[in-house]
Image (cartoon, rainbow, N blue to C red; front, top):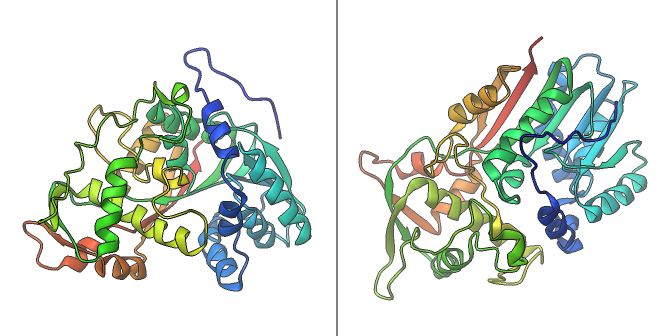
Length: 353
C-alpha cells in the first residue's frame, strides 16, 4: 500500500519551505483544531460521513493533513465495523507528533506517515479524504497552481479502481465583479487594514524561501486603502470574500489564543482560501462548478464527480453581516450575497477505470 514518493522529471515542487513553516506553527494551533468536544466530534463526523455512503467494503482509507488527529479518529469510528487500515499523512512533524499522542489517548489504531500531498506515499487506497487541505497546498509552495494540480493527480493515481476521494474546501462566490464593501464595526475596519498590509506578504518567513512565489503579493494596491473619513471600498467580490473569511477565522483564533492581535506571523495570514484558476493567468477564483471542472481536467478525466453540494453555513453569514455591508448592482437582498461567502464545497469523486 505504501511506497516511496515518485518525483516527476518534468517539474519538482519544492515543499521544503512549506514544511519548515508548518513546523514553526505553535502547538496551540493544533490543540485548537484538535478540539475534541462532543459538538466538534459530531461536526467532524457529519463532514466525513459521506465517504461511508460510497465505500461499502474498503480495505484502506487515508486522511491527508492530519492536523491534530481528530479526522483520523472519526474515520476509524466510521469504519469500526470493518477490518480497514486507516492512514494519516502529513508534512509537518509537529502535527504527526500531536496526532500520534491524541490517537493513542483515544485508543485509535492508525498508521501515521510523513509525506507530502503533492507526492503522496500511497498506492491502491480505496478512499482519500482531502478536507480543507487543497487551499493550503496552493498557498504554501512557490508555484501554488501547479502544486494544486499535482496534488490532485497524485491523489487520483494513489486510488484503487473505483476508489473515492472526499474533498471539502472553501468555495468562491458564484457572483463575479465589483462590490461596495462597507465596514460596520471598528473590528472589521481595523482587520481590513491589517489584512491589506499583511496578506500573502509572508512577512515572517525567510524571504529567500518565498521570493520566487508566483502568488506572493508585491504591493497592497489590489486592496484599496480606507481613508480616515471613509467607511467603504470598491473591490472585486472574490477578494472581499477572501478577506471576510479570514476575518471570521481571525476572530476565532483570537478567542482560542491561537494568535496575538494583528500578528504578522498569524498562520492564516499567508493562506489563500480561494485558489485562483490554475489554467488562467488572471487572478480569478473558482466557484464550485469551475472547481470541479478543473479537477476532472487536470486529472485527465480519471475522476468523475458523483456528488457535489454546497454547505451554506448561515451562522457564519449572519456573523459577517454584523460587521460588513455589501452592495452590488442587481442584488437587492444582501443576505443572498453573504450566503455565498462562507459556503463550503462537499465533493465526492470516483476513479474511473
